[in-house]
Amino acid sequence: MRKFPQWALMILACALCVPAWAADAPQKDDKKADTATDAAIKPQRVETTGSVSIEGAKLDYKAIAGTIILHNKDEDKDDPTASVFYVAYFKTGVDSAKRPLTFLYNGGPGSSTVWLHMGAFGPKRVVTLDDQHTPAAPYQLINNNYSLLDASDLVFIDAPGTGFSRLLAVEKDKAKRAAKMKERRKEFYGVDQDGQAFAQFITRFLTEYGRWNSPKYLFGESYGTTRSAVLANILETQQSVDLNGVMLLSQILSFANDIDAPQYNPGVDQPYALALPTYAATAWYHHKLPNPAAELVPFLHEVEQFAMTDYTVALAAGSTLDPARRTAIIAKLHEYTGLPESYIDKADLRVFGGEFEKTLQDSADLTTGRLDTRFSGPSMDPLEQQSSYDPQSAAISSAYVSMFNDYARRTLKFGDGMTFHEFGDVHPWDWKHQAPGLPPGFFPSSTNVMSDLAVAMKYNPQLHVLLAGGYYDLATPYFAAEFEMRHLPIPQKLQDHIEYAFFPSGHMVYAHEESLKKLHDVAAAFIGRTDNIAK
Image: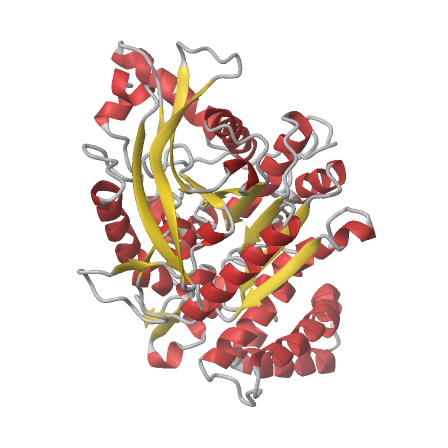
């Protein structure tokens, strides 16, 4: 059977911290998890201790690697639905009531949280090369000078079906167990289902560890930002859990803005305009611009202005665009992207993500990265129309997965006899979303959770939001994320509760060490301003 085309795989894996190829590689749960043995359906908890030096200051912590068992809506203890794995880090020697608590997760959908855990804010950090393929093992795991544990206790969560998290089906009969597992997939693998699962996990965690009165934060990356919008709305309006803050890294809330496959949604040209600044940043980085600017950020502001004015108007004109005006727009696009004018003309001014990644460095037979366009790799097929893999994902995945498998078993003492699924088989994913206030049965559209975040912010007008992203992220372009935030249906005064931070890095901002430091400082300061703890 023919594989999905690359664009389809990218959408399925839209984030996004999941390489596109992962969607084509389903993985089966362990036999122990599938059969839901007594060990699998009982919560597990392994406690260890450690210390970390964060920007020169030593901090002692307690680490707990464990699972929380979810149940159906009726909380039927005889019918557990999922075992959700987490790693929690608690600073020792302090009053936990005065410690913020941050829940962190990656996206995919289908990604474990190995990336944020081992690359961004855990006490240990994997060393990878800045914009090149990291050599094979042995890899390095070092003290993380920029762990967020100085500002907040941390809980890294693997979504059901990923990492060490498992769906559960308690049935002795093999056929009944298979049927129930099929139903479990429908119960968890979808936009709204996923949000409800995380809400149940968080409320159970707050109860188990006595943290209901702690300042509470969500930190999601990529599809994790989609999850955060849905989750924040559920926690605020259904669970009476007011959040202090929501931190969104490499955001995508409206999938109509996705640049991976806008060619299949003709008449909706917004993605091309919102991705143009990232194209420009990438061409600037790889020295492909005919007249390169001296500094990146001022140059990007210029491109943003063009994207929202002349370029948007030209795209909106469609076939009525004046030929002379079309020629001028093509020349400007060449100036901002480095792509040949003839190519832009053939593309009808509309170059989607995979085409840009394949074409920018085509003269050198190089494909440009998607998650981080600073990366490059040999093109799989010089005659391809679009990229067939992501050089950035290929460059660092082995280091992260290898070191977490080692760290989990050697240091956290968890996972013996289990398989860690960095990318879970969560497809087909149910992208249907019941937006707040939308009548049931309303005609379908692309997934958009902007209303969810807006409702959470209006329901709790003290809620603050931090948006962070990388200039070189073509999976979730930074300008598209900013556009979404500027268009949230909230009162103008609540826009003041949104903070912005962009970095000279890609989707995984923390893969660039200088950006990791700045991300830590921005996130720590955000928590410090919003935790409501008397200083």
